[in-house]
Length: 107
Image (cartoon, rainbow, N blue to C red; front, side, top):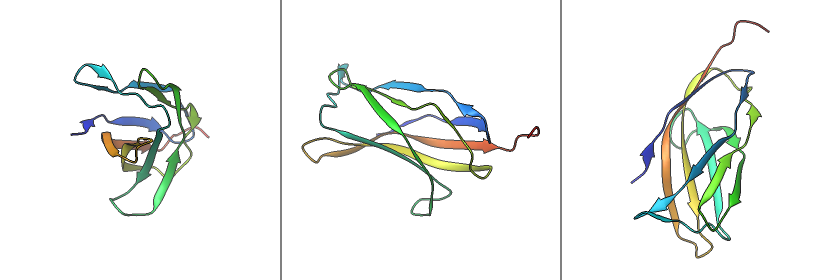
């Protein structure tokens, strides 16, 4: 079952690096050879608004991050999930939620 985590950021602002560690039954999930993906969409199966860059920085200890970046897409409340494909081919979605981008005032 995926944990729910919601984000809010301003359009055009820098979204700070966000670190994660995946544990299963209190044991770090080994991400060696894994692929971690995150996409923002307005609705499931809809057009990908943003393919979010993810970096695995400690595979053995199940640690990865959403990379720091400027979020410059249309203001909207997007849905996302973080999907991990293990080297074995097993696919699991561990985190999902809303990623809300609000309009900024100053440009």
